[in-house]
Each structure stands twice: as C-alpha cells, then as structure tokens.
Image (cartoon, rainbow over all chains, first blue to last red; front, side, top):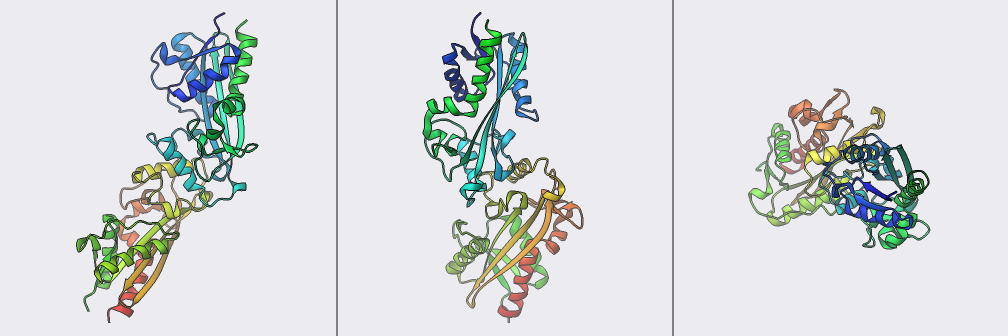
Amino acid sequence: MRREVYLVTQNKGKLQEIKNIFAPFSISVKSIYEICDIGKVEEKGESYAENALLKAKAGFAKTGEISLGEDSGLEVDYLHGAPGLYSARFGGENASSEDKISLLLQLLQGVPREKRTARFVCVVALVWSGGEEIFTGVCEGYLAEEPRGDGGFGYDPIFIFPGEDKTFAQLGSEFKNRYSHRSRAFCQCAEFLVREVFH
Amino acid sequence: MRREVYLVTQNKGKLQEIKNIFAPFSISVKSIYEICDIGKVEEKGESYAENALLKAKAGFAKTGEISLGEDSGLEVDYLHGAPGLYSARFGGENASSEDKISLLLQLLQGVPREKRTARFVCVVALVWSGGEEIFTGVCEGYLAEEPRGDGGFGYDPIFIFPGEDKTFAQLGSEFKNRYSHRSRAFCQCAEFLVREVFH
C-alpha cells in the first residue's frame, strides 16, 4: 500500500515539520492543497480535536485520500489557558507572529518565572476509509521574557523547553521534531498508521 | 484671570468629553495642538501619573499655558490588571477599538459575570506656573459579553456600570460625564483650578 497521507494545512512551516517527523516512518506527507483546492477550513470548533477533525474530514470527503487535520495552541497558565484555541487568531486575523508574541509578552510583563508556565498542545485527527482517530501531544514549558532564536515559527521564539532553558526557536528543528507537542502527536499517529492502516 | 486650560491630547473623543466636564466650571479647554505642534508625547512612563505628567510638562514647557495631561486605562482583574497602562496600545499600535475589544472578549470567553470585574482609572496631571498636581478618578464595573451601545469611545461598549447594568456606550455622554473615572479625576482638577489657580 502507498504510504502517503495528506495534511489539510496551508501553513508551510507546519507541513515541513510534519514531513520531517514522518520521514523515519517512510510515510510521505503532502498538502491536500497540492491535489485539490478545498478552500480554507474555518476553525470554528470548540476544541482542538473538533477543529482537527473538521479539517481531516473536509480533506477526506473531497479526495478519498488518507487525510490528517491538525490543531494546536499555546496555553498560558497566567492567562487561564489563553490564547489556547485562539492561538492562531490571537491579536486579530492579520496579526503576525511578532504581533502575537509582543502581545503575549505585554500581558506577562513583570510576571516572574514561576508564574510564566505554559504548554503547547497539538491534536491530530486522522480520517481514512477505515474510520477516524485522534492523537494528542503536549509539551510543558514556560515563557521567555523576550524572543530568542530564529528557528521554528509561531510562538517558538518565546517557548522555553525547561530541561534546556532554551526556546524552541533556539533549539532548532531537529530537537523540536523529537520533543515537541507536534512531534508527540504525529509520532503516535505515524505508529498507528504503520500498525493499523498500511498493512 | 482667563479661565482657559490646554489639554495635551490628539484624541478628539477625550477632548470633547473634557470640554463638557469643564463647562459647568466656566473653564474652557483647548487642545494644545491648536496653538503649537509639540509632536506626539510618548507614553513611556511606568504609571498613569508619570505618563500624564510627561504630557502636561511637555505642554507647559512649550507654551507657558496651564497644561493638562491625562492617562487612563482599563484594568481587568481576570487578566491581573491588564491591559492597564497599555490599554491604548493593546493589540498593537494600529489596532482599532474594535480590535482591542474583540481581543479582550476573546481572553474572557466563557468567564462568568463574577470574574469579569474591571475598573477604569484616569489620572490627570496639571502643570502651571505655580507648580504641579495629580488627580485620580476610578470607576468600578465589569465587562460585557459583547459590545453594546454606540456612544463613547475606546472600551466604552464593553464596560458595564453596575448600578445601571448598561455599558458606558449605552448610557451616553451625559451619564458618563457625571460618573466616569475621567469625570471624577477632571472634576477634582476643575475644583482645584477654581480654588487655587483662577483667583
């Protein structure tokens, strides 16, 4: 069986990350937008899983291919879990990553290390002819006082991985692909695909 | 003595509000920008009072006229007092009032009434040939679930005045000029001017 899956995303940073995570499993990943234009799938669900499923279902419905949808967020304890589900839209639809980061840092200005705890959460939905599955990955850390490093994307420059005391943007993609929330969710997904789907 | 003061602001909504508050005291208010261009005074202070003083001092230094500077903010308890000092810049320099409001509502989504408490704070600095004074006004309330009313400006459409259960934007300018944080600070200032300066 062709070991190929389609990710429902228009985010190139995410696509590349997941290509790299799936490579050791000999699974190739393409953006669904390479084979058809399913338009923008609105993230109108009330949970990461709902949003991820909305995307994967839209992809599968349109193509019949093994489809993956992903939703993720950064949950800041000091902000009661915000931006969470709204991480991508935080600060407005047109806010850049820099805008989002400076807004978050502003809200946490003067807040000491022990209250800056946060976690990245990633949920992957897999939809294929055999059914649907959900995989969740979490990565605990805390927020930097200012952006550091130029790898990664999104909130990576302010998310500190505690064991290393460096941000994801400083630690680089190889590290991130091993320990990140996204890696944890997609590795579970890859193992499931190998075990249950590609046989 | 000529009962005239100069407000260091480029915000027309604020200017009009303060003209109305000062009218019963027979004090006329003009924007300092009507008589000279002092440029934009950066709000780089670490308190409302510091920002208000920066403005009033800049106005007095340039014109020798009785100068008023004002700084105000909305302090949301659930957000540990944010946006507070950053209320005007919340969501980025170019964010509109609508942007700021939707960002705040997003951060408070699903938060029940009893945890939506907030206060408007206004600090006025008066600088004249006789010295300088600071006046503070506070108005307690809580945040609406969605914007209501079309009066006022800034955060008025989501700030509910508890006794009335209506937003400042619904209650209108006459009500606001009697009970708002700004009214409280500027009325103290007007009384001081009448008592100590215009005699």
